[in-house]
Image (cartoon, rainbow, N blue to C red; front, top):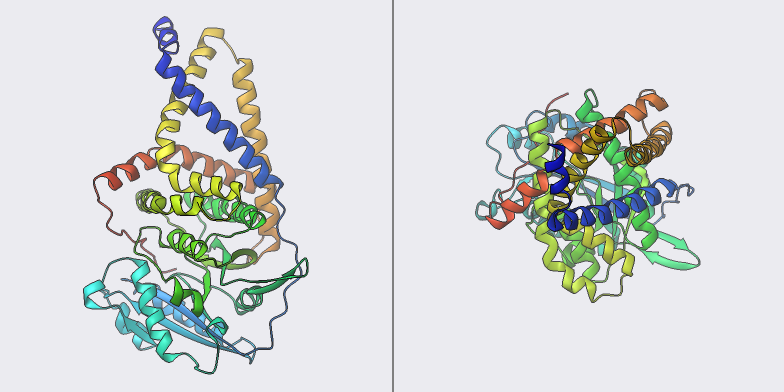
Length: 430
């Protein structure tokens, strides 16, 4: 048996796959180390301008009767706490729910519906419907850049303090140059964390995604993440959302192509419900992967823009990740088999296995420390996790990365077969 496996790994095709995997492994190590070294922002709280602002919180809703009432009550209460120069308004956009979402929402706050012809076309159409409505209802005395639209998921929560931080973040001074942002993305955290899958999601958003966004800020841009995305009415009118499965990334790409500036802040947080069960989690991630591939058509035009080479590399890997990972997943499997063969053949732990395990352990510890530090400082209503708890969350994240390794294959299949219907994430009442 060992002889047959050894012959397999001398095959030229297998060696090429292993070489590709090794290159991506080095890329992964470099990125993780860079993210681990990227500090959390420690800028002082920006001062909110005394200029009059209008803030519209838009909540897309489709069959959300279990959570919509609680969300409306929480957001309404926070909007009332905003300073006098900010007029806060809440808008629910129902995408023709088949449950009682529309009836509940209309009884509590301002609610509209998408058109019959575009119903269930995706989140992008819901947001465009909101923009069309806001254009007719906004304060005509304000400029389009003083009217801010915030996108909050139907299970989302955000505080008035964080809303003030977002509004103040639209204009900052760096190195005496005035940078006017037209999109600000907040950090995202989970508000329900009770099992390993949910702990993995909170770790992913609070550490890896957050550090990746901070690194992108360093490169000069922040990517919209849907929930917690704030844009000026000016940008929403000029660019608008598409109906791709990853409408937030598509919106970001269209924004940069149009020459607008974006940023990310982890000093403001929107909370959302963590997916509780594995199958809905897989469906969500398949949609995200397929949505990234749909955005590949923007890459040729982005390569012609003035964004930095590092930005282009980051965007290319982000968008083409499912396609690239189809080779990497196979290579990882072969590499795992190779390590097992080496262990059996050597009768004990090999140097290569020990080195790989050591690297993995250092990375896990590094990420756990960053996660612990962030959650200790930011907006937790309960005690922040100790280091052991943070490390266990990191392990849960690693496990679910392994358990969902075939997701890019499924996403690629859906793109090829054009099975790209929108599959929404189901939310549950607390």
